[in-house]
Image (cartoon, rainbow, N blue to C red; front, side, top):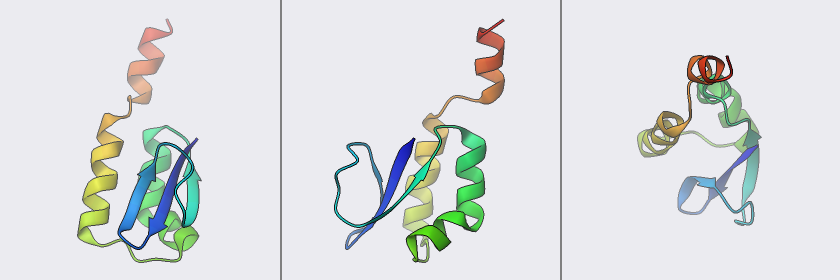
Length: 75
């Protein structure tokens, strides 16, 4: 699970799990992050995601492996 936190500086991916602020957790799978960006994170963090927050989270999403890639390597 990956923690996302709302801080005074905006929304951040909390790799340590120790940042202060309202947090939410997502699996490390792209489909969970896509759903999160559609509204679940906004609700869980009780915050609007601005363009900068979305861009940062989308950059993180792009670093995650595709489920198809994982399925092919497990054959």
